[in-house]
Image (tube, rainbow, N blue to C red; front, side, top):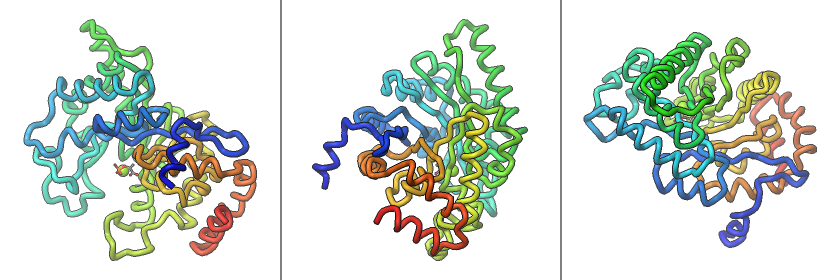
Length: 323
Ligand code: PEP
Ligand code: MG
């Protein structure tokens, strides 16, 4: 099995009928980056920056952040690195004092873009570090926990300002740094048509999108089957996101855990997803699943998927795809 997978190391991630699927890496450590690079990742689709803020009492300064981001960019040798701005919340054990202590509902609290907006100086420092890293290779900026157009516009304006002042200081910065939004809160998915023109790309965070859509804690085992992407509301939401993005000509990737689960590959591709971001440890398994797919046939049968009325019919659809 492992040997068979290893034969795919140098093969393209292409369906039987020739549709190329982009595999991005969820990576942050040097090892992840090296593995992603070796396995032919299109780039890093999700570089979570929280790790710089965890297990330390000090908020990392611009230099420390810049060094980490530049190393990731250099490690990918010319392939794009998508750096997500800080998504720290009271659920993460942070000792920097940034995240509020004892929020009654940390998942619904001051985290992601909300925390960044409430600490503008800190946000500015992170954006400066990212912009500086862009002088070493292609970089994209990804905003977590977006709910509205206002938040996107705020971040875009601040990022413009940051780049202008770096230019005035004579610091090298890439000409173009795409700005994207995580679609992981139902409000963002529903309101996407109001701000899709303001972003360059989207990344669907299905871990949180499922949690917030179904009011089901992503870490609560007691909920059993309630936390699941196999809900008609989720299928419809995902299908709408893809349609809106496509109409606007904006690339859309999935970066939640389901991207790394081959059981979901036909579902995601059937709904029109052509970019998946996951830990590189899952690349070969997903590449194998993609190579077994007949894309045209899948898209045709996905009409039934969008009409599914319950979990059982979604599961039946999935089973008939992999039979
Ligand atoms: C997600 O919510 O799906 C996601 C990729 O982000 P995180 O797991 O870091 O919340
Ligand atoms: Mg998330």
